[in-house]
Length: 106
Image (tube, rainbow, N blue to C red; front, side, top):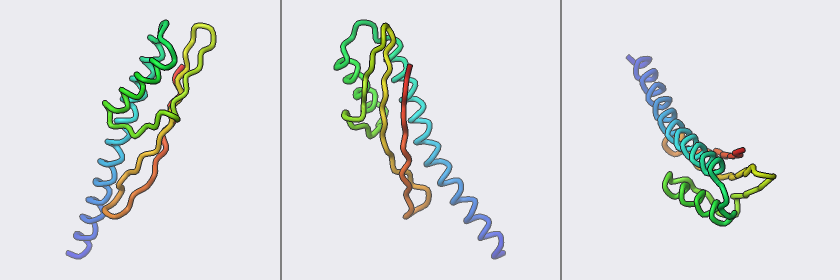
């Protein structure tokens, strides 16, 4: 009986961590895709307009992105958007871990 309770507790802890980490990772992937699309269809938009769009996407997706960590670079007709942020993930009740996300779109 005791082994079953321990096994159940371990299973529930792993499920909790997986759900929390998975939710954050899915949000990162969605945000990264939206930023990539922004860079792809940048056209003649200014760097300030692109940065504003990235911040708008971050707010929409609940991404804790600081504007100073968003960089726009242009080489010929190619736009590269670089962004970086850190998010805290609750792996277990009472235990959080920082996870850094770096986005580079080309």
